[in-house]
Image (tube, rainbow, N blue to C red; front, side, top):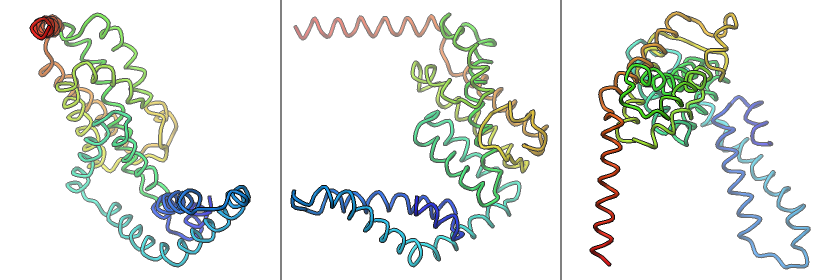
Length: 275
């Protein structure tokens, strides 16, 4: 809390707060668990001494060590992001899209989305718009693919695909996880292609969002997203690319079942030989 407050009031923003928060954890862990203390004063040490010393160390570090270099770095980063042209914006958008679809809500996805949300405090609102577009297209692309390429999916997957329309529209990327788990080699690259397309178009077009979440529903609020037609085009293009990639790469559901049966038979034969 102290690190975040100092970062907010000191002008070194989310980067300073993030570094201060990590430092606070390591300093407190060291004081609480790595320094031997007699049992007689252990309770008082943990309750009073550790908080006081850790707050003092973090406060001094934030003011005298972290503030100046992080403020400079944040200013450079903000100026660079605000000055991105179409080509640079496209490349950054492609990176955002790849990271958003790589694990669909996992640590890679969360790292770029958290980074983009943090940039909003510095007035840079384009990356979060690209993140939202890239996070919406995996479920939306899967939903479209289950309609266009029904033979590629089982009956259960086609039923689940119907819910992906709502999940994708609501910016819930995790709706794509069951499909990726069942066939990661073909599904994940398809999702990455679609998300990179959506985020790349969004960044290249200079779309911004003042909402960090909400999916299609925040688009109904006036002035939340600028260049709304281009944003819808980005999401639509990413959805179509995802669906077409799935249709091209995925095997039919009958082939998948046949392969699974072959694997089971092979495992049985191997087990019998071993016995």
